[in-house]
Length: 71
Image 1 (cartoon, rainbow, N blue to C red):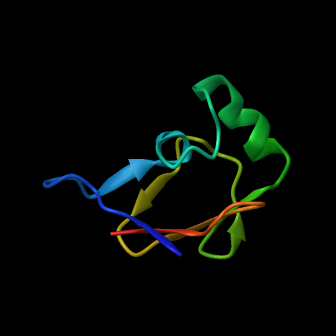
Image 2 (image 1 turned 90 degrees about the horizontal axis):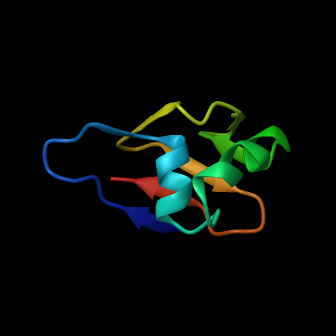
């Protein structure tokens, strides 16, 4: 499982930004396409909102990629 550290002072990151950060999608325009397919889960629940706030301790599972824990 990969861990992504938030910057000091940040409590969350948008799911779309996280997907770009971990190279799950090459561009922001493709984030919605990945989310619509149901390939992304946050804490075990399917998620299709790219604006979803992902917080410390959350685990994001991306189909075909390593899971990501936000720290």
